[in-house]
Length: 132
Image (cartoon, rainbow, N blue to C red; front, side, top):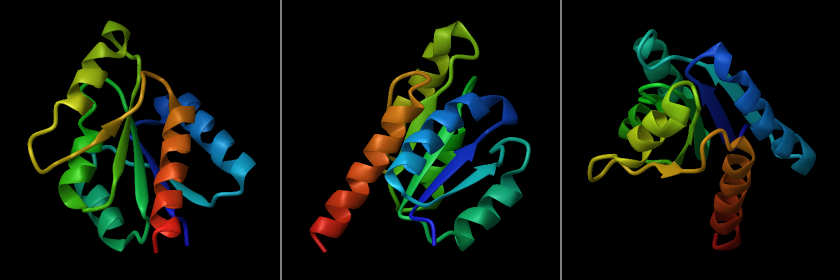
């Protein structure tokens, strides 16, 4: 079982995912890595989320950066969004991730900051397990 799932909207986001997996590999934390676009393959995303037993999702996305919000709308688990600097220096993605409607919370780390997403996910898991 992987407690952390990393979902990329596109293969082009892999350099940011490599930051996340580097931190998780160093800590020994298990994870699952998927490339699933919220726009191009919404059925595959729905199916994956329904079957996942993860505790935390890390969603890496650029441009419209809809992926973190879509995931958050379909699960009650924490979602961490990582905006990617594809256009406008990543500000478009950052604003898309942080401006979620009420009831659809998404935590957001800095632009292209996969390392902090991994550290935040591990802290969330630590808090969950220390209070259990």
